[in-house]
Image 1: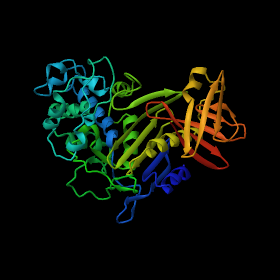
Image 2: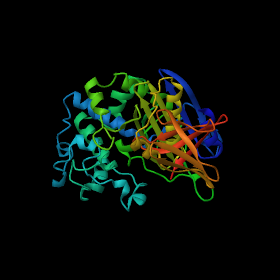
Image 3: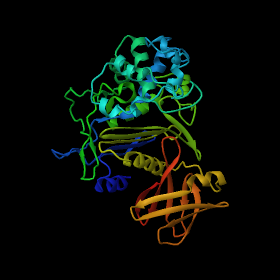
Length: 415
């Protein structure tokens, strides 16, 4: 695992902190690259990162806590808590906001967002930015990812609890779990060990664009460390925050594998509760396998696809090493089709995966075709003894593969 992440860091594709835990034991816990490139300060295990949309699961859990206390009805319209809600929102319920099935348009996709993301705003003022836009679809009739929906849930939390979003999470989530290195981020606060955010450019790595942290709210405004996020996963799935019924509801898919604030995907005998996050300067990934008590956390401070790819790859490696993989001797033809595609290994080489009848094959640029024989979930053996492990996104879709050969691991992303 360390070699895989280090190779990405050496190529300046990844910078951040990584933690992998299996059955209560931490098996990888390291920082890679630099938290501050101008002062050459390295990332460490206790470096703080902006979480982006990993925040959404915290918001969803806060709503479930309020629901258990009788303060929030999941099927009540959001206008119960949001003043001046337009008539179009009459069927926009808390439940639909949690699952992105409410149809409220995503304000971070608006044409003016890049200009407005630097401007401080109140929560009510932020809602005004998208309140009068038409719905993307009638509530309950589709699913489309919406940061606006989680801004509205932030308002629900504040109105129902009588506390600020930050204070409610601190009192009811962070303090009970001992998450002393987590909170709602602020541009003004001096925050020890906070990573700076970076982005790639044609001239190399540059400082990321500025975000005013009044913008993301409960859709993406939190910061944390890998150690604190492990406490979160252990506490949440250990039953310390929610009743079994609430936890089951939180992690049951509503539509397109999305539950409440997390994807809950089942594929090839594996259950993955996961989400990723991204905003300027930061990309993050966190996944939990409840059957194996396995957690993978990748927090990055360099924009790019590496955290998602590494997180999925580390989860696959963890499952292989757990000794509990579900054996798969034959794979259904419709499952084989999900692996088909072209996977870019380098800018000049790729692996083409094809399926004919009940057989999967792979061909590296300029090489002969190799038969891929299934050995366990998403894992195939090559003719020459090498191994291919397909990796999946938080939603369960196949997005890449790992080649294990001659003691080396390489990731290729699906084009």
